[in-house]
Length: 215
Image 1: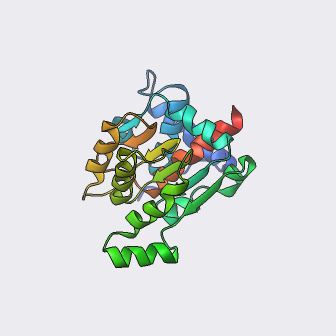
Image 2 (image 1 turned 30 degrees about the vertical axis):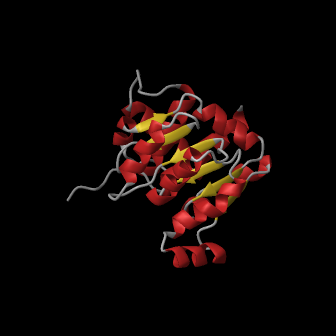
Image 3 (image 1 turned 90 degrees about the horizontal axis):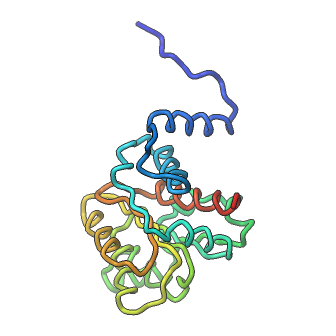
């Protein structure tokens, strides 16, 4: 039996940097994304170790500028899961006055979902819509949340500054992102197809917060 070759010891901060160096080395130039788009795409790979994401990530041309400006203005960040909310550390958003909210477990949201037979993700999106103007909507789990948001926009509702649309799964996940891609009025970052997840939605917001802090 051969021993597994381990990387040399690194401090916590250097582990992340070393990870990025490995990703850079395994995706040689010319890369599919450059500059700040690569900063975000690389962090998504770092979150999943899935290089195939590079074939599916799509940035609206104004997405990064819109997201960074929203964070700098102290926007609210709405997530569709507590996992995504927990994955966006306060230390990155609080300096800008941003708050991160997930309404999924709020009593009125739970009650509405029960009364209407909708998903809690849909009910949470309905509860958030009065406050989404200028916000970042980070959707990493529930296609029904993204579909409801797109219906809200189609009906002339107030628009967020940025949609991070990355619901994951087999039922309407890919379809919900095609609906997002079909509209061109709100900047977005998405992952086409079935892939996605709360960690990826959180990672995208984290990358934007880091860009905001360094720009």
